[in-house]
Image (cartoon, rainbow, N blue to C red):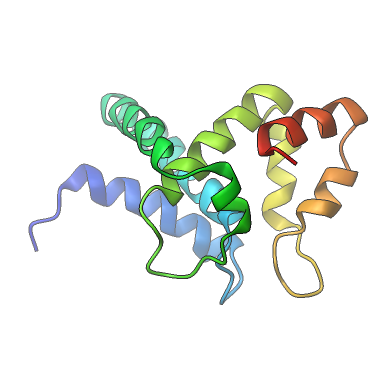
Amino acid sequence: MNADPDQVRLQLGHEVFHWICTPAYVHHWVHEMFAMEMSIRHLRANGFNIYADTCEVDFHQGATEFSIDRMLDESISPPYPSGLHDRAYAVGKELIDVIKWDRLKPLARMFDEETQPDLAGWLESLTVAEQLAVRGILSL
């Protein structure tokens, strides 16, 4: 196996998030958003800031390949379409910038009766100003 060690570290952060927080058979942009964020946080926490910076630039560029509307409408299942992870990451960064991490992270553990991320329930937990900001980012 000729895997790039930095790529392995990035993937490790991603998969650990899924292992801890994603129920089996959940394939949803919300959990890909969190997994991408955790992969970058994992790199930074372990001193791989230059690689994390490079990845972030790549993710933001790749996000242009995949619209927010497609991300919200698409029934996602592996293999994931090109650009999905990048768009999910970019949306996550916008959400963090606007409502802050502490208000976003409860969404990682909120599920509806079908064991899918409960975006509607999470939105209801936010202030009206936060809801408006999130709806603006997600074009809802």
